[in-house]
Each structure stands twice: as structure tokens, then as C-alpha cells.
Length: 166
Image (tube, rainbow, N blue to C red; front, side, top):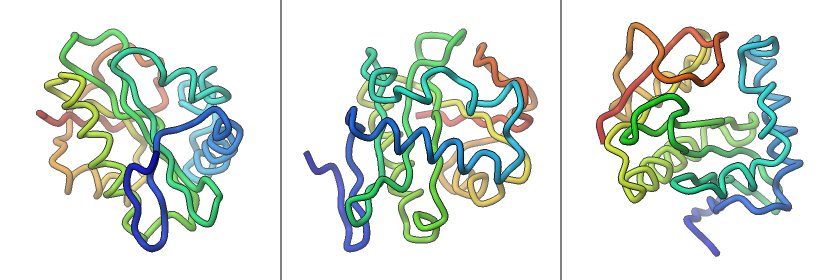
């Protein structure tokens, strides 16, 4: 099923065949920003089986494909330890060839659309200082910075937090 496409990439729901590619992307991109130790999403068990993790209720994960290769992804799911109305933008990572082509903005729009369709009223995310392009995208999308984290994600290595009223 084609979700969205432009001339340079395809945005679609994740499939089981994409799991290894997304694990590789996450394990390639996170070290670029120093996010390798405990307290970072790179160590989450779901990294190896994203399609299964996001098949849960009120969850969705999408991939960006270019020339038949997965080059990025992102998703939403309920915020662990949060209230029923708050989701979390999760594991949105792109290889360098996916950056600067509009895929991040398209992915953000699709994830927020899914969050609204699932009935969430807020979307939370946490990130790391130094992920400047990502933080600019969050702010352009209407997210506002928080002073402290929400929920119980287990990502103690993150030091920057955002919330968006949907």
C-alpha cells in the first residue's frame, strides 16, 4: 500500500521485511550523535522487530524508501507511563541520503496524522542536544520544549523534551 510518494521517495507502513534495515539505520544514526550507551533507544529490544512492536493498538511505524531501499523511519505509540491521551513520537531516524529531501517533514506529518486518528490529544518526544536539524523540525511542527521528561520511557540519556497539543 502506498501511503505517500514524491519523485524521490516513498513513505509507507513498515513491513516485517523492513525490520533488519530499520535496525541497521538506528544503529548507524544514533552513534553519529553520541547516543550509544544505556538510556538511549538504540538499546531498546524492539529495535530488531519494529514491525511487531508497532502492530500494537494505537501504534504505527512508517518507513521511507528510495530506489527500493529503506533509508529512514518513524512512528507513534502510547507514551509508556503517560496518560491515555498522550502518545510518543518514536525512533524517527534517517540515513544521510534521506536528509534534506523533505522526508522528515513528510514523516512528521504522517506520524501526527496517525496520532490524531488514534485519538491522542498530545504527542511527546525526547531527544538529545546536538540533533539540531531534528529539533528544528520539531519546533517547526509546533512542538514546545518541556523542562523535564514525561512518562517512563527508560531513555535517561535524552536531555531535551518536547510536547505538542494535537
